[in-house]
Length: 261
Length: 271
Image 1 (cartoon, each protein chain N blue to C red):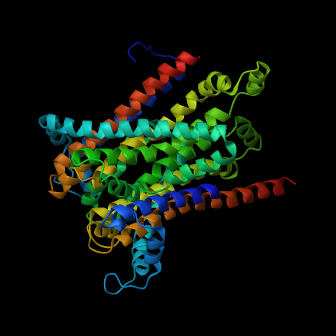
Image 2 (image 1 turned 90 degrees about the vertical axis):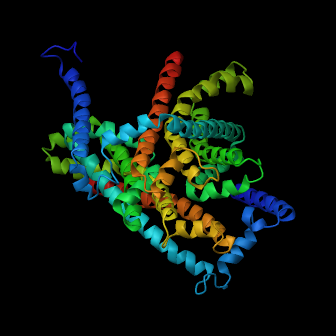
Image 3 (image 1 turned 90 degrees about the horizontal axis):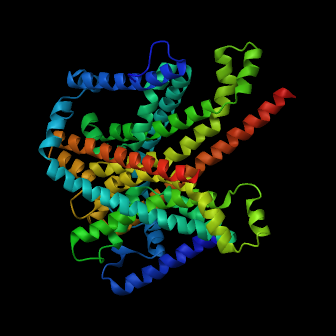
């Protein structure tokens, strides 16, 4: 994998050199990576008061915090819906086709109208991130509930376990890996949604900064900084979920065997 | 549904219920929407969220205009999907043939999947400025490339599984037949990967529609369903914007339905 990363960097630099030779404004098309890194750490003030680094951190805070809130709301709603669907046959029958349908609807395309309905860019970021998180979590969790082996149900039944105990002791622990599949899919999506909503309206946020830089309101390197930063955050969010999953599941396994012994 | 008699099996009742309940729910939502209750719940007015009959009226009045934009978006989604899936499959073949370096490449490709489209689209539009002197053409190329990159990952990861997760001992059997690597590939690995291709497409078909709509936001040339949603909201034509939203949803559903039909045809032949 390291080899591939090096290969990618080399390829980028080769193209960047070609672009530098042939274009009048190479930083608009493909700047050298060194230039991008320089621009992050340079202490030149870009908008009068902030350096590129400070500016990106401030705007990223606004974007990511809302993506995060939306993500958490989406997880909670998705999990509760999955729970309700598994508890009640009627709710499952009503919700299941709509869960399938919502995956086919381009929610990101609806971003402008959600912005118009909520009237507040901060709220619409949260709403869209929540919607995008909600359905992968719900569908994967319900798949997890369905995958519990009948033998486990029979065992719990023979213990005269209550419905509450069946859920807390078998169903919910069992569906955790499925839940995380949903979380891994939706983490980069929530961030994408939040940045996209930023681009719709002025104010504060990574997407807003991105479109300002594209329009030439500030140096083009800010655009590249944001591109690399959001790519990095997107990938990081995916791996963060994998790490949390590994931590949680190891704990579950150890705890489970401990009780049995 | 009409053919079923009273006292039919509970399985059949289950089936009817799983159609009737969601339809009833949908009708309920439509009634709430048309009567304005939904507006009160969402705290909005019929200007931002027009009544369904008005939206349907706009779709039928502007069908010519809408179809132009639909084709622009569908063309981008399908071309990008095809290219991306093809490249993804080739990457999977390469990773199967040279596992030492290939699997690392797969990790990189799936990391690309986590890169937000919002960051990707302006970059690719920048790179394709010289492709053509006509704004319409170079926007098209850029949008197709965005969809290509987004649909590459799911195909390469799934196809790799299809090419490597073989039935037990099947590759040993091929060896006892003294089959070469090419024969093994054509007779065993390729057919084995077909269901996995469909698994990948189930993810990337809806993804390609989203990719097409979002890349339109950043493109130079103003065309496509996604762009029309945004442009109409900018000039406060909410009813028209809603018409395009409904159309966008229809595109997503239609493409997925076509995939389901293709899957039924292809996978039945195999069995």
